[in-house]
Length: 279
Image (tube, rainbow, N blue to C red; front, side, top):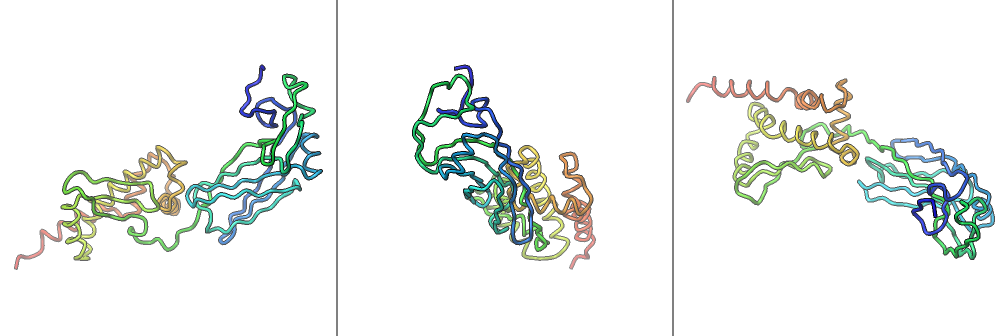
């Protein structure tokens, strides 16, 4: 056989196994409460179309969101489709997959437009077998995080079981997680309890500033993966609001703006502490 196939039978959309097209045209409307996905499956293959018309096959729209563990398959007999999904169910990157599957067992299946290498060959298909693969595409279900005003809304410092060692930044959750060794964490807890602006500025400069820088470096190394997390969306939204281009070269400027110039505030705080009169 001269063709390269990913299926054990001819599937439309799999290399040149079958002539014809299956090229869905899709529009996504991101509403505050509902995400609407509508379009046309745009199928051009008589054999498969006849199976759909006779009720032995259906179009499939598969919706997958890793961030929220959402996965649904919607089946249609009409080429025009529309699906509504609650906005809370989708966040970050959403993948849309398009197929046509057999909805009943089909004996001696052969497609009249199959490649000549399949001439004379038939296959017995069972319910769920794929007849056409329209590929996949992605969109970003971005949410506005108007309530995330404080750093603690997207960054959290936790105690690491090790007594000493380096600060560890975990960018693989909705919040940036900063793991401090137990000794350092206990010291930080004492300072944080003071709730004075001068100490808060020092803490932000020494902990939050480098932690967010590190997380954003990770994000630009693998944007597709990290854009599913809340902290990524919050920082990107704030950068855009501040008219900063969301780019690797602007990481330092973005973080300093979000933290309101932490180094400057740290130095000012230290000076105030030094200038305070001794008791």
